[in-house]
View 1: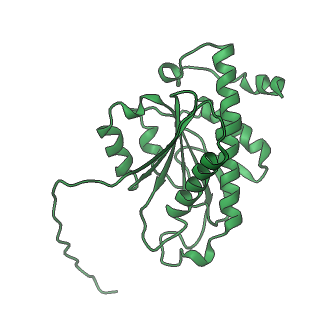
View 2: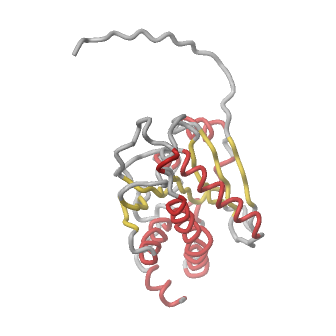
View 3: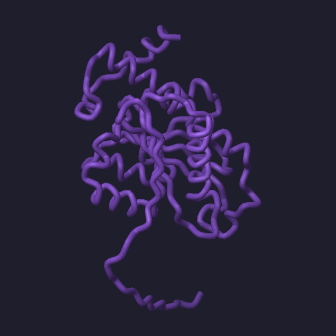
Length: 239
């Protein structure tokens, strides 16, 4: 139980930050942005499992040539600080973002969650609730529960892009060297892929389409002002 003193030498200087950006264009400029990290070297579930799943989904869109109403953009960033710098450095880039989805910790874990947005009453939250009806092992979590990440930056009060998070948690290997490839389950990545697919290419379009036609509002100007309490009834009528 000896006390150790650690001296860390640091240097501060201007340099580039490497950010990956992949876009699949839809009919509309309105964009759903996928948020992933490339942090935690030597670990697989934390950060990289979500990145793998998102890359798989973008490949699926590109190879299947699905005609989509919305545009989808995958951002590959350093955790949280990458999102902050991206938003601060691209004053026009986020203008078309109408929603965001973050994901990591989807390679293994105890239980599936989809975390609500900060307001918990946006159109994204209605989509998340509908998604739990299809996947009975998927539970809703509050915005500040479990593990928080880049969704906290995109859905911060200064930005207000409604952001969900998909994750499977808890697991004992979190933030240790035991979080390795041996534990990665392809069935779990497939499950995360199916959840994302349900949100992005099905429910999201239907909910947004209903709102454009039934309520006639501008998402980007009113995304936290709308009461979505009756959307579930409308969706049932559409089936």
